[in-house]
Amino acid sequence: MSRRRLVIALVAIVAVAGGGTTVTALTAREKQEVRNDSARLPDTEPITRGDLSNSSQQEGTLGYLGERRINAGPTGTLTWIVGSGSTVERDERLYEVDGKPVRLMYGSEPMYRTLKTGDKGKDVRQLEENLRDLGYGTGLAVDEKFTKGTAEAVKRWQKAHDQKRTGQVGPDRIAFVNGAVRVKDRGAETGEPVAPGKPLLTVTGSQRVVRFKLSVADGGLAKVGTRVSVGLPDGSSATGKVTGVGKTAKSGDDPQDKSPKIDVTVSFDNPKKVTAFDQSPVTVSLTGETRENILSVPVNALLALPGGGFGVQVVENGGTRDVKVELGIFGQGRVEVSGEGLRDGMKVGVPSA
Image 1 (tube, one colour):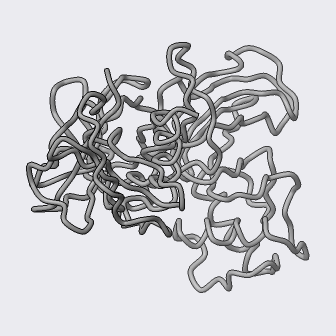
Image 2: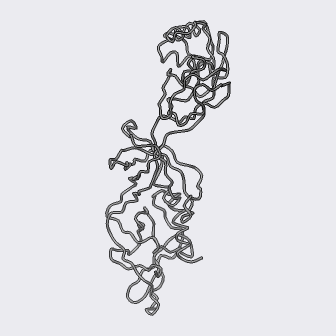
Image 3: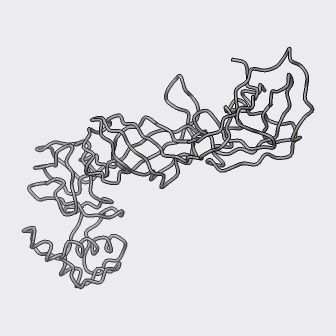
């Protein structure tokens, strides 16, 4: 394996495993005898002292969290359906069948049955939580049991919406979704016949997010909680943080760049202020880490030493010697190094261009 290919592979491993943490080389000769071979000296670059940052800019896309379908609950004729692009929150209408609204309630369990006194389950708890949060379940014990108190709370909710006060409720009146939703697409139009299970709406979460792909070698830059700045299409910027990092590396879609990448999701500090169109391109600036007053060399100056670890080839006095180094952060095509006798301005070998 060539020196260049070996070093690139090792750097990728170090960057992912350490994320900028100093990595100490294993056993290797700290120095080799000076080799007087001026006719075959390598190309060189200087060791420099200064600040080094592993910040990065990535191209991303605006979107929304999650995607799921909402299917019809009752049988009948679709008489109204919410428009694409609309946001629907708790207790607001999603659609109407035969003039009777089906409303959104928050919860991860599907609304698959008519809930009534005596029923038990997680869906009962979800219903009680919604009734309480809407103000219809004052004093209601939130548990997994549908009691007389639950029925009374349901009746108060039904009265507020001009429904028959039965004290029981099912999928013909409620659809459970994790939270507020944004309507991406409609699967049916008014006047069409519907039946339980017919897809009516494709929805996403209402929260604006940015998604982008990050190379494995830069994986240490994006950890959950990492602060970012997002450049928006109108020239403004918005702050946020990384809220999701993929666990599996996949080859990129770009035919010119098949290097493995991980999916990263960013959430905004104030998503309501982000008004750009869905799928708009944005630029994500990862703040990373900055090390001050450190020595660094070009990444391609690194050597894999025979005994393990890393080194650089110092070129001086008409000869070369290998010096074992400890690595710090990677950034801007350079890597932080420390080792015995290294100093600012010293020349190190690099592969010929």
